[in-house]
Length: 568
Image 1 (cartoon, helix red, strand yellow):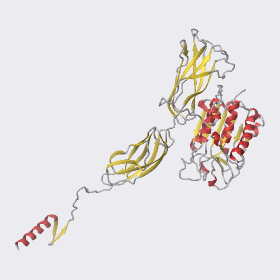
Image 2: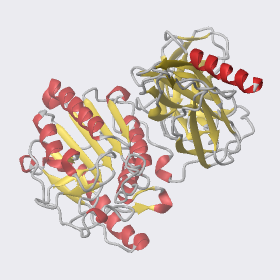
Image 3: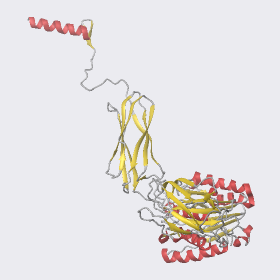
Image 4: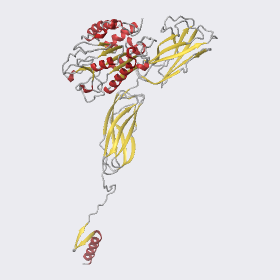
């Protein structure tokens, strides 16, 4: 009895403390009892990952050996509550040797409606191999309010060594006469990277080992941040030997170096005193290489990539716009109709070397676009047109394009295809007629156009036929002004590759004729050579017809036939 009374009193006391007494009945207020590790949350955070992007040094969208890269992303809190102790954790879903990943980035607390930018460092070590890195990015919140994870795949590339050489050189004097003591001597040098990879922090230093030799310019050291595969540096070094000089020849030492100090060949050039220079651009050197580092010397495959003729005479009003569109897949990953154009980048790069070294274009006036977007192409067409318009008839324009071409199905008008334009939608493509009209309107005295592309819907590698299903015979464009157009193929034909030479078939024979004639062939000779050789060699190696064609403005009549880039 006493026990029951005590229990009743305890219950009443508990209700009076934790409840409310209303008309003799109690209304119980519920109390949350926390378990260990739990917290009370009044507003929930909501984390998401946005703006993800892969960022690399050379912008080729690969993780290269020896390259520092980043995965850039934004962590947003779009919820009403604060996210606490946020941490970004990066990991590899597959095993990739030679890849270093900074696995954890702490962001701390993120208030509602706030954004944090994150850069996750990724480094390719020198022993990185070709492959595919599969990343997973997780954003964790200390209480479990995590974001959905992000997955990203990036291709990896093993190390490709550069190889710096003195590819060509020429001594000259102001009047083209004898090499004499106490008179200025000009040395023009082409330094080229003939290796398989880019060279970084390139340095070229000229020195004169013998006493009483002096350089006359303001500097004898030249640098370049990056020299791509096949790219060149054209340098000039002015020097003399005083009358105290006691030898019969003058050595010039050229010290080449790059970031790793392994892949450059130093060279010593000699010029003899009292040697007669019959022409300003005559090559009169004999070379002696200093010991090179123990590396395998790389070489470009095609004969037209080597021994590019050097003509020192420049036309200050000659402009070149050179485009090589090869990698369409990279820019259109979601589309299956576009294929890459084999060798197009290499075609354009080597043509630029010929433009500068052989065709008399100043380096400042030579514009090279590789894998160019519609915006980049349009911008440079406008720039070159405006530059040419400043000098009118004195101006000369060279336009070279290797890549996809396509006709409009409705009106058969031909277009060149930027890498970011789909073959199924030509709204952002660039009409050939528009290019012709802009260059003609510039008033340039000469406009020369080389098109290593077809406009039927076929291409070097199966082409854009999936966009349409059949080939289309493109409409013949009308040209005016002072235009001459060299095209790689006719009608419904395709512009094909020359696998053995790693060039387009058309480009190879174009470069071959420029090489053999040092750029001095007339346009009539150039057209005849390209037409004969391409049509025969295409049947021999590709078993397909490819007949280059020529389009000439009626206003030129036959005057174009005697045009040439370099004089005899």
